[in-house]
Length: 180
Image (tube, rainbow, N blue to C red; front, side, top):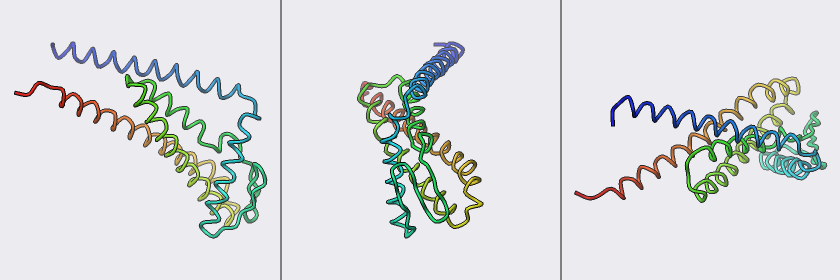
C-alpha cells in the first residue's frame, strides 16, 4: 500500500473517530441535561457524604446534611456538576468511539469511572479544605483550579485507556503474527 493511501486511511479513521465521539457526546449530554434533578439527588448526596468522609480522614470536620456540606465558614450545595457524572459521560463517548470489543469498553468505563470519581473527590476535598481555611479563596479554587484539574484528570483517563487499548492491540497483533 502506498504511503499516500496509508495517510488517507489514517485521516479517514481520525474523522470517523471525531464524528462518533461528537455524536456520542451530544447524545449523552442531551440525555443528562433532560434528566430531572431528582435523578441526580442520590448521586449528589453520595458525593457530599464521600467528600465529608474524606475531609474527616484528613482532620477537617464537616457536617453533611443531604446534598449540603458545612465546613468551617463554608456552606456548599453539591449539584450534578460537582459529581463525576459529566466527566464519565465524556470518557464514555471517548471509549465508545474506539473500535473496541464490548468487554474492553466496559472494563475501560468501569475503571475510568472509579478513577474519575476518586479524582473528583480529591478535587472537592482539597477545594473545600482550602476554602474553609480561607473562604475568600473558595470561588477561585473552585472555578479555576478545580475545573482545570477536572479537565486534566479526564484527559489523563482518556489517554490511559487509549494507551492500554493500543498496547493490547499491538500485543494481540504480535502474538497472532506467523512465526518465522
